[in-house]
Amino acid sequence: MTPEFSRPERMARPPEEVRVEANAAECAALARRFGLPAIAALACRFRLAAAAKGAVRAEGELAAVVSQVCVVTGEVFETPVAERFVVRFVPAGTEDPEPDLADDDEIPCAGETMDLGEAAAEQLALALDPYPRAPGVARPGGS
Image 1 (cartoon, rainbow, N blue to C red):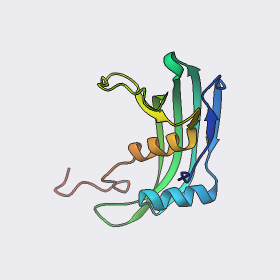
Image 2 (tube, rainbow, N blue to C red):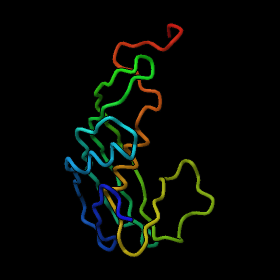
Image 3 (tube, one colour):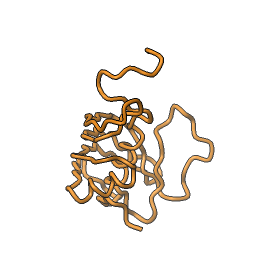
Image 4 (cartoon, rainbow, N blue to C red):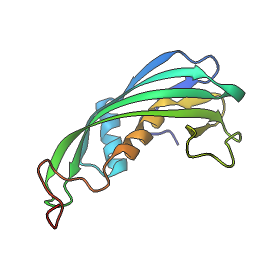
């Protein structure tokens, strides 16, 4: 299955820098996938470097604007998301069987292609507040 936001790139001799940006249809599809009212924008800049054993190290800078539902008021509000991350794309089957939490996250890749769009989408999902509150709304109980 092809992800909603797919930007395949060859792992062999990767470019030094790649910017990926979701179009309106891709943003809408990702919003449905993540259960969000909307994603107004999603872009990510990757700095790529070949690593050992056919892997590619990627430093990413994610920028997005998403609409979420406040868990206190039920109000829909828009919020920016900015996230920096590092991942390693590795050939499938070469993942570390006992990863160290201090190591870069590994993304297994089938064949010779890594999907930068899907990696950006996954990082967006990880960056979202699981209990979003609209600006100025306190947690129940006053904190």
